[in-house]
Length: 297
Image 1 (cartoon, rainbow, N blue to C red):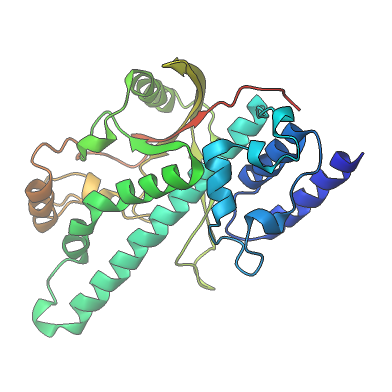
Image 2 (cartoon, rainbow, N blue to C red):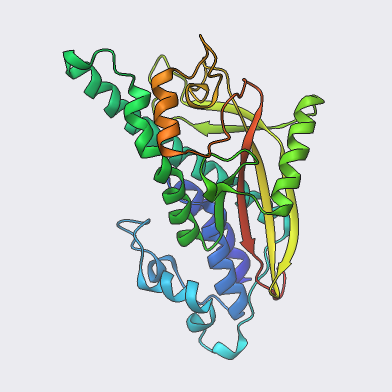
């Protein structure tokens, strides 16, 4: 009965706190408490309650050794396996968070570049996209690496037409990208997601609506089972986001101006990511979650 009382409380607590992944945090608590067969921990042992997102030593201990060190009888601990629905929900939440963080950082760089151009009257013809482009090679991979480290998942973006070679898909991902492209051509139904926008004002909506395809699969690699999730990345119209400024047509009058093309060719001599149109599948967000085998609650 104690366990039944604790889990609803933890659900309310974690959903109410901004900036946290509710499902992931609940997963930790469920893994420890259910795995131990007792109520073994409270929030303050793993979180600084004055700054809930601050990393603590106990969080590191959990990620290294699971819930066993927190049990009064470590020999009783068994890891808890999330259900398929929970894995999907966690992958969707993580993808949203990754998208929002990347969106926010890009807009920060874009705002700084625009301000710098406006501040210098001699550079009034400089394209802000040229100024911001040198930040792009490391922006998404750095954020993906941070998410991967913090979550314990493999978080990436992939594309069959890469600009950055680090975004090359594996065989399963490449096949799903082909399927996404075919589904887009056939007008198949998509899942709707709401993404928080970093630049919202009273005039600009606080959320971006995006409709994307999804794919999931379980794979086994070196005796470790993984839950794989992919969500397509569709090129939006310029009225929504400026993606075509760096991925659109390079023809005269196209979205990619000569100065931006020069910047692209300077950083990516083997670029394959030009010539897209609104509605095309640019690539996909991918999440790979290792499966913890054990009793299923």
